[in-house]
Image (cartoon, rainbow, N blue to C red; front, side, top):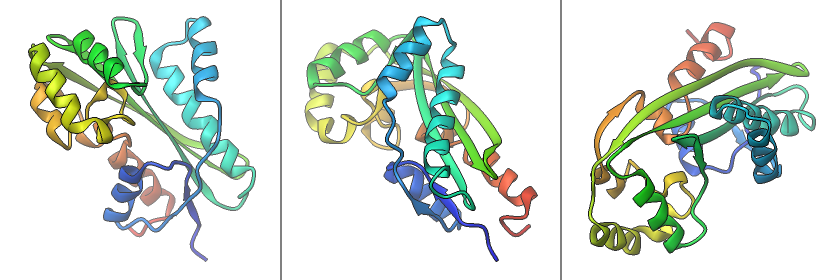
Length: 199
């Protein structure tokens, strides 16, 4: 019998990536206090990589406890810039402040995924992308936010590279799937080697 795969994320783009790759899966959103966990880890001087990995594992574990026979994929994405971790903007003014902080410089997106099954983490990966944002004017950034607020309000850094946000950048080094929030190639490789997906 085929293994059930559950995505422990409410992200439309993550489920679309899996669907487009031919990976049948269910979705169950893991409810954890991400802000409290992130702040606790930051106070302990945890690296952005470790924070993303820990949050991904917590989400996978939460859903796996209710679905012990399934493979559960937990995900998290962290934006790190000069020792600062950005979260989803709370308002258009917060989005503007984030973009002003990032412009003209390079930041990192870290996309973590953990697969939980058999009562333990079976696989994990953190993909890293480096993005150089151009030195856009305040007026452009304000207009960009006004046009795109409904879409970018749920995106760390207040941009979506797959939409108009691509115009904010002059260089991107890394895997595009990691920008979208899932190390898809590595995940597919593991599921294929495991025999969950046909080779």
